[in-house]
Structure formats: C-alpha cells, structure tokens
Amino acid sequence: MAELIDRSLLDFLLHDWLKLEDVLARPGFAEHSRDSVGAMLDTAEKTATTHFLPYFKKADREEPYQDEAGAHVIPEVRGAIAAYAQAGFAAAPFPAALGGLGVPFVVHNAAMAYFNAANTALAAYSMLSVGNAGILGEYGTPAQIETFMAPQLEGRWTGTMALSEPQAGSSLADISSRAMRDGEDELGPRYRIFGTKMWISAGDHDASDNIVHLVLAKIPGPDGKLAPGTKAISIFIVPKFLPDGERNDVVLAGLNHKMGNRGTTNTLLNFGEGTKFQPRGGAGAVGWRVGEAGQGLPIMFRMMNEARIGVGLGATMAGYRGFRLAVDYARVRPQGRPVGNRDVASKPVPIIEHADVKRMLLACKAYSEGALALILYCSKLVDDSRTAPGAPEREAAESLLGLLTPVAKTWPSEYALAANDIAIQVHGGYGYTRDFDVEQLYRDNRLNPIHEGTTGIQALDLLGRKVLRDQGRAFGEFAAMVGCQADAAPDDFAPEAASLRAAIADLKSAIECLRAAGSEADMMGNATNFLSAFGHTVLGYIWLSIAAALTNSAMSADAADGRRAAARYFFAFEMPKVAAWLAPIYAGNRLTVTVKGSWF
Image 1 (tube, rainbow, N blue to C red):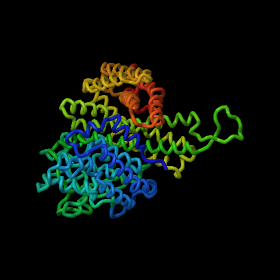
Image 2 (tube, rainbow, N blue to C red):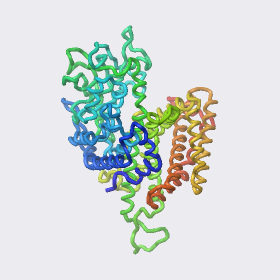
Image 3 (cartoon, rainbow, N blue to C red):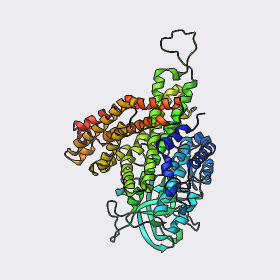
Image 4 (cartoon, helix red, strand yellow):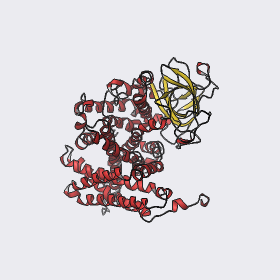
C-alpha cells in the first residue's frame, strides 16, 4: 500500500520552500516549532491511517440511508470524528482564547492533507465543522461561541453551511428562506426560520450528538415581503437540537444519491415545515442571528477563501493518492519489452519502464504535487493576511489571496481529477474495476469542480471581480512576482523562465483586449478560458519557484531530480496551452455570447 503522503515532499514544501519558520516566529505562533509541527504531522498520519483509511471503501459501499429517524451512516464515521477531535485537529487552527491550539493555517492544512488522502468522505464532516466554527469564532457572541462552537471543537457536535436552495442553486440573491423575529434571549436575537435548503453536505446523520447549521435566510421588510438581491440576507445558527435538548424543526426531506463521495451525507432539509416538530410551542425552526442583520453574505464570504482552499485540498489529495497508487502499480506490473527488443523469450519489464507510462506518471506528478504546493502557498497567504508584521504586508497578502483563490479552488479540482483519470489508465482494465481504489478516487473527486462554486462561477469571479473591477492591480502585483521569480530561476531553467514571462505577457495583452470589448457580456463570454490560462500560469510560477528551492534542499537526489522533471514536463507539455486558451480572447470571439439556446 502506498503511503498517504511522501513526508519528504511535505517537509520540503513547508520548510525549504515556504519558509514556515518565518511564520512560526510571529507572536501568535510562539508556542510552536519545527519539532512540534513534525509531531502534529506524525499524529495526523497515524490518526488518518488508523481511523479514516480502513473505511475508505466501506463508506462508499455502505452509503447513507434514510428512515423515519433521519439519515444513518456507517458507525466508523462517529469514531473518525471523535479521533480527529481528540487528537486536537478540530481545535488546531483557532486561537487559545477560543479553545484552540493556535496553529498556523498552513500547518492545519498540511495535517488535513493526510485525512483527505485517507478518506475525503469521512474527513468532510470535520472539515465542515471547522469552517462552521470559524464563522462562530469570528462573528459569534461569547454565549454563541460557548454554546455552539465549543462542542464542535470537542468532536461531540458537527456543523454545516446551509446556503443553496432548490430553486436558486448558486444564485444566493434568489433564496427564499425567511427569518421572522422571535424576541431575544441570552444567545442573541432569536428568529423562526422557514424554508428549504438543498445540497447540504453532512446536513443530517447519526455520527454526532447534534448538528449546528449556519443558515442563510432573508429577514422580511416592513411590508412583510422579501427584498430581491442580497442585502436582506442574514446568517443564523439553527441547531438540530436546541441547547436544552428539545428537537428543533429541522427535518431531513431527502438524501441525494451521489456518483462518489458517498460516505458524506448530502441532504435536502426543510426548516420550519411544522409537520413533526414545533419547538417551544411555535411554528418555525428556532435560530439565532450571527452578526448584524443584512450581513449574511459578507460574513459567509469572509470564510469563503478558506472553504474554497479546503475544496482544492480535498481534490488535490484524491489526485495525489491516485498518483501514488499508479506509481506503485507501474513498478510491479510486468508487461511488454523495451522498444527494439523483439526477443519474445526475454523477461517482460515493469510498465514504469515504458516511455508512455512515464509520460502519464509525469503528468500525474506535475498535477498533484503542483496542486499541493499551490494549496499550501495559498494557506500561507491566509496566515500572512492575518499575522504578517506590518499592515502593508497583510494587505498585499489579502490582495494576492483574493486573486488566487479561484485558482486554488478550480485548478486542483480540474487537474487532480485529471490525475485520477490517468491513474485509472495506468492500471489498465484493472483500474476500471472496484477491486482497485483508483476508480473510487475518480468518482469521489468528480464532485470538486462543482461544489463551492463551479469552474464557470470561479471564472466570472476571477475575471469580473478580481481582475477587471480591480483595474488589474492585484494582477499587476502578481505579474511583478512572476518577473522576479523568472529572474531568479536556475540557469538550467532559463527556457522555462522565458516561457513563464511569455505567458504573463500574453495574459496582460488578453486583459487589454477584454477591456476593449463592447459590453460586460462580451468581456465575460470567454472568462473560463481566461481562468484556464491564468491557472496554468500560476502553476508555472509555482513549479519554477520549486525548481529554484530544490537547489539547497535536503531532499534525496532522486526525489529532487523527479521534481525537476515534473517542472520540465509542465513547461514542455502544459504551458503551450496558455496561448491556445487566450486565442479566442485576442480574436474577440463572441460565439458563446451570440449562440441561441434554440440552436441546441
């Protein structure tokens, strides 16, 4: 069995490449050191291997089911949630004042990499709870934190984000869930919530004692009507069980039966339907507002960078594990003989000796290890935006993080999935059977280009909000970084440095073409092409930076040479795609804008 993660790679990325010791030197992280980080990663590997990995296939095979009592999952999910919390990982990224361990976000995600590699479906329950607790910790009152956040850090309760609705999907301006004022108590402004939420991961299950939902809903205006748009949206704590143990009116209406990632329940929830429960003698699910009225989306999006990085991490590790399994298989599977050897009596060679298999494995390596580097890089930007010594440094990190977040979500979702596809191909016919893990990893990973904002939505965010509306400031800062990295490239990577400079110049030209377009629709018509080109350029920057850092690393010669080869592969086989993606933008191609729906 392949080890979950090559620890030498993780250590190299954290210490040699990202200079984690600089982060640990900041006052907020003074209790941590390289040794304590190493111990945490050791614990993550052990916990993931013991409590998550053994149930990878069982969680897929014995998928959740529903009866009158609600949704049920395999019993090992409860054990995994408890083990994760007892080892300190639920509390790790939060400050000590909130009951946490004060670990840098980049270290937290390095540890989470083990859990996602082992069993992303089981890891999702804890990942969602950490996101839920993060909102409570930043915006909740002391009473809300004590009542709803602390049990999640202890692993007794879990949490969700309840955003989407059947009729609205990703268009949150069109949600229709309503929140009616119901007084105030020690937990803050109290409301009664009515509505239906769709696609709620971990929305109902029997793996924790309670489930804390963070629900987006609109507060009606003085006329009793829901205002269009997003300004009326607030965010509410709506637990399955109220603090006194009474059942709240949150009812499981159905389970979505998924292609993969089956171990995580995915639910349709009714709030305030009134057919089974009427808590405290009234209609509607009881909830408490978090933050100010009308600030639901700003609060939710404050945490969205971390959530989207989390999706990218989950995608990355599914692709990475597929890559590791493919390498192991290719080393032991004998088939064929070297090109030019026609002696049928000679012994077949392992398929890893064939050039086309090496091509496939190099692609997997470039995609999955590049994605892991990208995710850890963006995780460090989260730390820098919060804890860098000076305000200018924090602001610069925040700006760069905003620009790169759409890439951190979409690039691993697209290309780690491609690594899973290639891993199946390396296995041949065996890879298409349930006997090998690679087919399930592909199915599990196929979700990631969809949730937390599809690739197309991320493209609109990148081009519309992060590039054009920003007047290109954040992009200009990134372009300057690319220039510096190209100047610092090792001598033997001069052609790759030139390729990266050309890509950033092409993107600048494309932005000017887009600005000259006649309408916003014309600007956005090729947004996904722009995201694809920009994403590959970001990964070119990542790989060139890694190649430079390898010069002084303690990594073994074979490991370092393998990563240099992956970098060269990316520039030789992937970077030429940038020009092709940008070609329709240069040409002012309006096909996707002008084509009519009736033509299909």
